[in-house]
Image 1 (tube, rainbow, N blue to C red):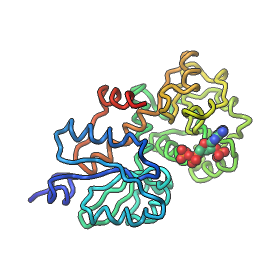
Image 2: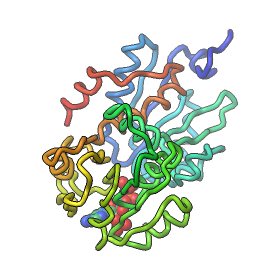
Image 3: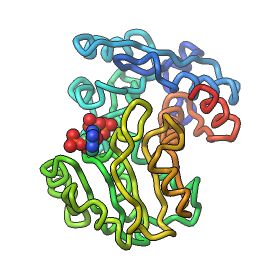
Length: 289
Ligand code: ATR
């Protein structure tokens, strides 16, 4: 039997494609809702489940993918970095980020690791502002953790030429500037408001403003009114940062678009269809927030 594009051997053999997300804890993940929505929208034969995998079981769980005939899985907190050790090949983009969020089982059983978080972020910006370009002015990124690394790699690949990374722990911002080259400069936390002068895009990648956390301590007074303001947080949908930005006239982008768009290439590699992010899908997820 011939295989079509990215549809893996196992799905042709089993005629039922299985995937899921590994995390610990993982019960809160919206990924099953997203992928199962697409499975039904495109009339596919398959399912996407939750796998609560303790860190000590990660290696066995990943190796079990092939044995169980799964197409692959998403990887979420706390496994995004440690999972790199247990796959056979890592996409160069994921290597630059230093983490994987997707595993695809190959026809020979090999595990390939990818990271689509940067793609998801860029797509969410384009969805909010179709004319957006990465090189239209300096970009300020708040935070220097895993989400920041994925977003910075996405921005650089989209053509960003000036990224100012601000982080509470300055040494981590310096590490990013060192890793990613001259387009990325580090800014001390005390200078975070001055860093907004002339910026075309502001991105919060910290957990500040998330449900249960205090608001990000940042006044937007020096930010141009035409700058785009984005937050990787999606619970709540409008963080205090986004509210502050909206009230002064900036276009805002919440973190839900990044979550939805990062799922698209993973779905494509398992199910052979590049799915769309539709208003119905947004509605379905927003109802759970
Ligand atoms: P993620 O993978 O979601 O990026 P992470 O790697 O733990 O998570 O990174 C969390 C980021 O939020 C870091 O940049 C962290 O700053 P530090 O490097 O100084 O820890 C930032 N962060 C967390 N709490 C913060 C706070 N109260 N104020 C400012 N930044 C904070």
